[in-house]
Image: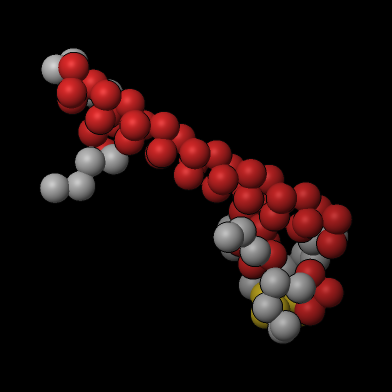
Amino acid sequence: MANIEDAVIAINPSAQFTSCPADDADGITWLDGTSPISKSDLEAKKAELQIAEDAAVVQKATDKASAKAKLIAGEALTQAEADTIVI
């Protein structure tokens, strides 16, 4: 689950900050001269990260189902499909 801290790092990987309470944009304290990021930018980035995370979960399930069907049919797998197989 994407959170505000993930959003900060995605926007500014070198940001120095603390967050209390966790996952609350209003609770961020910017440290060591880090330029503050607006609450709206953080919330937008958090939503973007969550959408990407959700899409990755769906894609992995799709790849796994495709891999199974291809194995049954004796077809070659893509790398993404092969990566879903746990032996």
